[in-house]
Amino acid sequence: MMEPQLKRGDVRVISTLPDEPVLVLGDRVRLEQVIINLFRNALDATKGVLKPQVEILLNSGETAVLSVRDNGEGLESLDELFEPFYTTKQPGEGVGLGLAISSGIVADLGGRLTARNGQAGGAVFEVQLPILGQDAIKTQPPTQLPASNSKVEAAE
Ligand SMILES: Nc1ncnc2c1ncn2[C@@H]1O[C@H](COP(=O)(O)OP(=O)(O)OP(=O)(O)O)[C@@H](O)[C@H]1O
Ligand SMILES: [Mg+2]
Image (cartoon, rainbow, N blue to C red; front, side):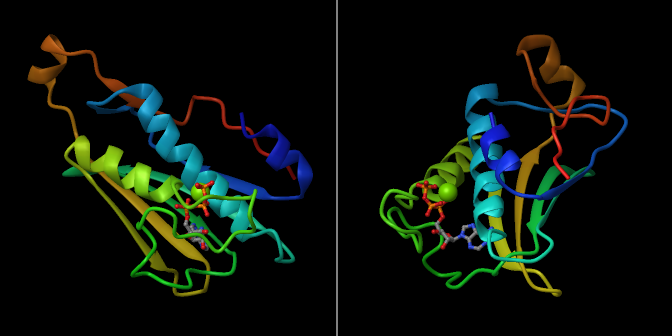
């Protein structure tokens, strides 16, 4: 799905995923929508940098935490970020709905979507979701976040 963007440049994609699957409760398509928007935003943000890099990390502790970090231009305005139609992109390149929709999806699943600027520059987005307990798995089919054995496309 992200192939056109990855082929366009020389973006390094690093993914750090746990060996064991992380299970969360939620609709797979909607969760994919969140991850794809964060990834696409990260790719857009690194367009102008010399060695563009996007890092995807998945951790599970008390909650499942999916982080998407880039070494792009960083976040201009943290206040407006999740507002519908807030965009710094050219007409036709973005309408400013991705993050508003994504934070709504994550909130619906009982989680949180947060953003900050990284210490070394670039943006850091974090999706926190409740981990699915074994009891709940018996009653509802879970969505599995990618584990290290799943395929991640990378372009050098
Ligand atoms: N990784 C990032 N680095 C820097 N700025 C970002 C990043 N992600 C989002 N932003 C800023 O937040 C704005 C809103 O992002 P959002 O995903 O909601 O909309 P969009 O990408 O502009 O358009 P859409 O997602 O609707 O195509 C972006 O226009 C950009 O200014
Ligand atoms: Mg977007």
